[in-house]
Length: 227
Image: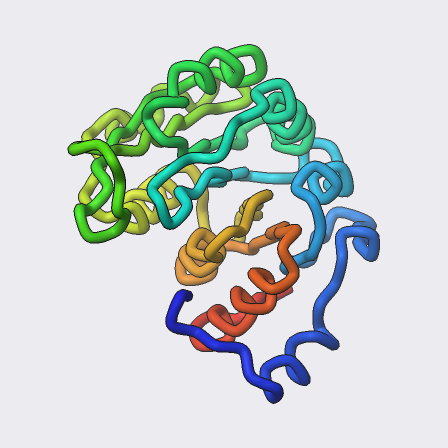
């Protein structure tokens, strides 16, 4: 996404299509896919109870100096609890977190979900200029209930070198085509692109308007958001 630039034509194309979370009005059993501008917690609150098959997100990104933002874990628990409400009984919750936050997040998540497994993978050396030698991320894979725990033995395997390949593998394991996937923190839009490439319906939230416009352009060059 870093190589993408928004020009005047892009703004004319994407700004009119921009919708905020305040405009969301889900009715009935059919939830249309889409990208929405606003805070994750506000977007999650619009989702009907037990309506989502998978919530997956990477809410943290390193800055240019390789530093992580400070984390308010009480605030994090609010959106995790809201995620539980909106996920259906056979649904999954996947959190992608820097390894230094993994244990604390697992403690929070275990209050709301059954943790199926943890997949660890390294960050490629040219991906981030980080101050430590072997930085890595964990994918915490969880379910709302117990019924799917033994259905995916491969979930405990080691993660691949590519983050996006790992996310794609996990999404294939825990969802099927046309299942509804939500990313509350769109960030770079990679999860959205993976979901549409796998023919999942997708809903995403992002509070940075410029980021969201960039994501819309990025997805428009590949798979578009489909209702």
